[in-house]
Length: 349
Image (tube, rainbow, N blue to C red; front, side):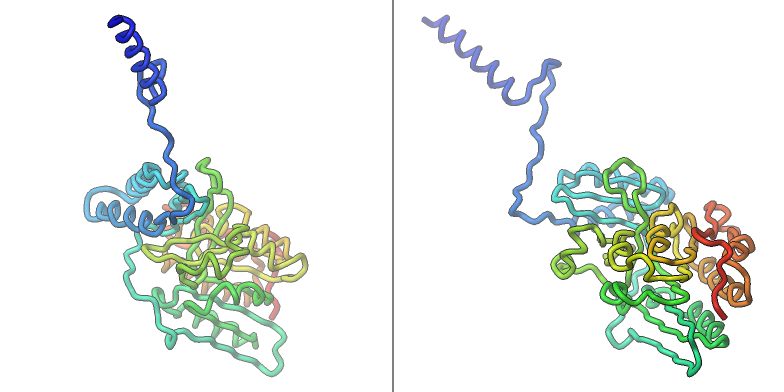
C-alpha cells in the first residue's frame, strides 16, 4: 500500500513539473507575460525611465551609438514591450497594447521649457499683387530660434511672396490637415523613421509637429491615432504629435498640392521615399530633404542658401548638386541634400 502511494506521489510530482513548464531538455520555461487589458500600460514612465537611466552614460566613455543600442535592449527587456527596434538613430517602441512611441532624438541636451501661449505667434504678409504663397513652419523655434526663417522670409518678400509663418505649438495637427497648399512649404523640425513590425527596417519617415503629446491626444485624434496617421514622437524627454505619410495621403488627395515644392529641413526627411511619395502623390512637384542625420547649424545655413538659389532661378536638381553635403559634419554622417520628384522644378518668381 505504501509503494502504491509512493508511486502515485511520484507520478503526481512529474505531472506537476511538466505542467509548470519543464521541457524535454530539462529547462523551466516561464509562462508568457499577460497584462490585464483593463489596466493601462505606463508607457510614458517606461520611456522616461529608459532615457534617464541610459542617458546617464552620456557622462561616461560610451559613444552615442552604444547608448542607443543599450536603450533599445533595455526596452526589449521590458515585459510591457512587444519590440524595440533601432534604425539609424531612431528607436521605435511597440507596447503590448499595440501603441507605438518613436524616439527621434533620444539624448537631446535641450532642457528649455515649452513656450507659453504668449510666445507663440503667427506672421502674415499680404503683398497687394502677390500670387505666390510660401508656408514656413518652425515647430521648435523655442529651442533653435527663427533666424534662419527670418532670412528666408526676407528673401521671399523681396520677390513679393505672400508669407505664412507659424512657430511652436501653433504648428499643430489641426493646421496641418488643411493648410499646406502653397508654392513653397518649408518645415524646420525633427524627423525619424517608423518600424511597424520590429524587423529593424524603416517602414516610413515620420515628422514632428510642435504640438505636445498629452494624456488626451489619443482621444482627441482618435481616428488619426487608430489608423496610424500619427504616432507619438520623442525629442529628448518630451513627446510630440508626429505625422506619418498616411496623414498626408488622407488629408491631401491627388491634385491638392499642384506644383508645390516641399522642403523638409530636418534629419532623415529623405532617408527613403515614403514621405516624399505621399506629397508627390498629392500633386507636389518636388520634395527636398537630408538623407541622414544633420546638425542644426548646417541645416539652418543651407536652408537659407537653398532658398536663395531657388529664388535666383536654379532648379531643384541644381540646388541639391551645389549644396550636396553642406559641410564637414554632414559628410561624416554621409548625409546629403537630395530630392524626389521633378529635378527641373523652379519656384515661381
